[in-house]
Image (cartoon, rainbow, N blue to C red):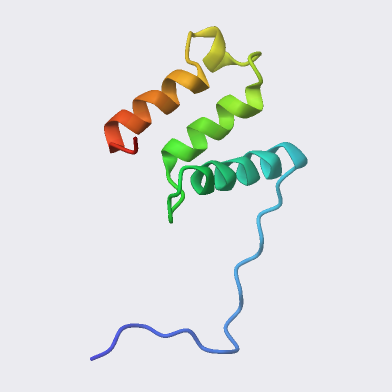
Length: 81
């Protein structure tokens, strides 16, 4: 028995529209993954991108979370030095 297959004529799911800010966040996420030499995009890259996008004025920064600290902790946790 094989798994389910997609029919070539199957209806495609509609695209979910997003605004310019969401597009920028996604692009920054991808760039963070590339910059760190990762071949995947994970939640750590999303966090770094959000901190980059906040530019020091966002909620995370107001709570004391900085991109430099998150990146240092990430590098230490993943032993990327």
